[in-house]
Each structure stands twice: as C-alpha cells, then as structure tokens.
Length: 574
Image (cartoon, rainbow, N blue to C red; front, side, top):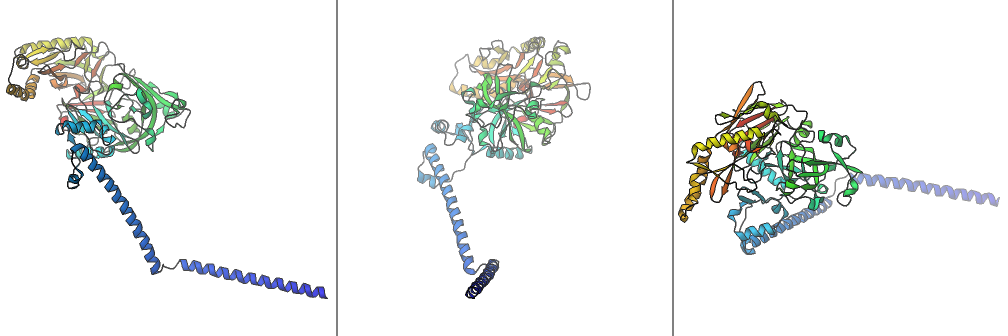
C-alpha cells in the first residue's frame, strides 16, 4: 500500500510538471506573436529622430571626404602652378585656372623642359605628340576625355568621324588613328594600313624587345574584359585567315601574365622593308566613336624589329580582306556596314577615317573602280590599272605591265607611289621633259637625303639664287613670308597625273590628281621645293600609297566590291 501511494504521488508530480511546460510554451508563443506584431508598427518619433541623425551623420561624413578629395586636387594644382609658372601658393589661391591645350611656342623653355622631362602625371607624358612643326601637351586625365573632345570637334563640323588622323607623308610617313582598347580604355595611336590584316600594340611584358612609342604598352591585367585566345579553339584556327596563326607555350610567359591555357594563340608578321612584329592574340573591348563598344581581336606584341621598333606610332591596325581585320570583325557583329572611307590631309597631314557608311561626307565627283579578285593575294584591295597619263602624255607601257606581281593595290600603309620599272622610267622621262620647258623658273637640286641621291627634287630658281647672295636681315624675313606662296607657284609648273581604271559599272573611269598627290615638300639649305614621290617597284606591280590619297576622299565599298575616289576633297578641314 505504501508503494502504491508513492507511485501515485510521483505520477501526480510528473503530470503537474507537464502542465507547467505546456503553459510555458503558450506564453512563449504569445511573446513571439507580440514581438512580430510590434515590428510591423511604424517607428516611434524618437526612433525616427535617431535614424535621421544617423543618415545626416553619414551624409556629413561623405561630404567631408569629398571636400578632402577636392582639397587634394586643389593642392596638386597649386604644386603644378608653383613648379611650372613660378607662382606662390597665395597667388594661386587668388586666381582660377582653365585647363586647355597649350602649344610649345606659347611656353618658355624652362616650362617645356619641366613638363616633358619630369611630367607631373604620366598621362601628360603619354599624350605628348609631335605633329608637323608643333609640339602639343595634352592636359587630359584619361583616354575617354580625349575621345569626347574629338567627338565635340567633329560635331561642330557636321561630320562625325570614327577617328581623326594624325601624321603626314613627310614627317612620319604614315597616317594613324586612335584605338581605345580594354575596360577601362587604354588609348593607342595605330597606323591605318589597308594593305595588312591584323591590329597589334606592344604588350606590357614586351620589355626591351619593343620600342618606345607614343603610349604606354597595353596591360591586359588592367583590363577587366581582356581574354587571351586558346590555341586549341576554333577562333585561333580561323582568326588569321590564309596567314595562319601559331601557338606558343603559356610557360614562356609564366612570370608576366596569368594564362588559363597550356598554349596561347599567337601571330607573326614580316614586312617588305624587313621589319617584323610577333606576339599573343587576345580579345577585348574596342570603343569607337559613333559606333559603340564591341569585342575585338588583336595582337599583344612580344617583339618588334626594324621600322616598327623605331616608329612613333604604337602599332598598326589592318583593314585588309581577312577575318582578323578591324572591318571584318565589326561587320560580323553587325556593328557597321561593310565599308569604310579615308580622307587624308594634304602637306600638313591629318584627316579623318569613317567606319561604315554613316556620317560619311558626300562627294559629287566620286567615281568607282571595280575591285579585282586575286586568289594569290586575297587580302589586298586591288584595281585594274589601264593607263597612267602625265600632263598630256600617256606612259608608253601596256596595260599588262600594271598587272605584274600583285596588280595595282590601294595601300594606305605605303607612303609613296610605286610603279613597275618600265612605267617608272617612262614617268621620269616625261616629267623631266615637261619641267625642262620652265628652265627660267625651276631647277633640279640634290636630294635632302644622301641615302637616295637619285631622287628627283626641284626648287625655284629664285630660291636658289637668293641663297647664293648675302642678304640683309629684313630681306631674309621677307623671303620667309614668301615661302608658301612660292611653293604654290612652283606647284603649277608640275603636270597633273591621270589614272585610267576599270570602272565598277563597266567601261573605265579617269581620275585626275594634282601634283601635290605625287610630290612632297623639302626645305634644304635655304631652298624650298619638292621631291617626286614616285619610285621603282620593279616587277611587283603598282602601289597606290597614301601620298596619292592626300586631299582625296577614298571609299572602300567592300559590300559592292568597288573603291571610290574623289580627288580634290578638302580633307584638311576634317
């Protein structure tokens, strides 16, 4: 009986404990429901004041940081003005400065030396260009600023070019455009070459194997969109077209760049003047004015030789008929129509390039030559040359002579006009006979370059005689003011050159170019004159170089397989 009483008591105590647990659970649930309900209520006025105080504090903190940044920039500008202008900080504080492009002639020698040898920012050094006789210091913070400035300038002229051109026949031997590569964009000046098919710029890890150019080398690790091409990919197999790409081991660049493949796609190019370029292939974002941003495959150079190593331009951009050319890559992405146009400036250089058919200036005198198909040289843009006429005299050669080698190639990457040997000799013969009619006004002078003593160079007899006699300072100054007028008068003594080509609509077209399209100016030992930019190409055909394109709108209508020429266009105003 005692045992049963103890058992009942224990059972009663357990039941009582279970009841307390159930009651505790119900209370906890109510508290949670009450807590949830409370969170859905709007905050109290005190809570709102606390939140506003925190927000205002964060805004004040950001404002203080912005003011600190502004003060830092202001301090840097003060230091620049102190170093360059010799002003005291107090004087700078009381004066506002407007950043602008400043010509070298407007700066004293000390300022130029300070800014060039010890640049305050790397971008100013990188933006130092030499064009004709002027040197410019560009006060830009990055490539995008320069790009936007170019857009605004071209809009003012109601013609929006893809890029302005820099360079000239005489000073650089080429014309270059700007390419913005990568994210963020890195800017490069590259030679516009319709006779080659690939674009390339120096890679950061090229080192001493690449020359010193206008811009810093491309750094793929600074771009968030750079991607090297795998050697085993279909892209590598087709990118180089008939030239074929090759492969290089990633281990070769282990200490320079991270490559997520065993072998990377590579290229190699060698040119007629014995220069060469080779490197790795990658894709990145190409930013183009009036077109947009698109994927673009190009070469990151690991070695340069010859003229490519020594040139000022950063690299080359090929426009030839090949999958790797800039035109074919953009057309494949439906970025532009299958065409582009060049408008190359005159003796002073410059000009503009237009990709696609939008915003291309109109030219009423445009005539189209048929583009020739040549399976031996599919990358070249060739025309069928029927005859060449100098003044009123036609060169005494057969049409077949112009079809030797690679035919008649329109090549912006070539500087001058090159003719087959027979045509070249006949051209010089006719030109000498024509100028002999003006012995009282013009005479032959030595070539300014002793490496080419056979060059045909001429100056007016008045310039020649003036430098033989002693003149007063005033007379010398007067002579300098007559220089450009004298050159214009001298030009009228040279005959025009007329080229007959097979027309795009059948028959033939005749294009007449002024003497400025085969001459280049010289200033040698006080004489002012011209040299003839026509040279012997032996049996390799005709090369219509950039000298022939000066102040002529040239349209490469690849979709319709034709090339248009509009001589006498004012490309200097582009």
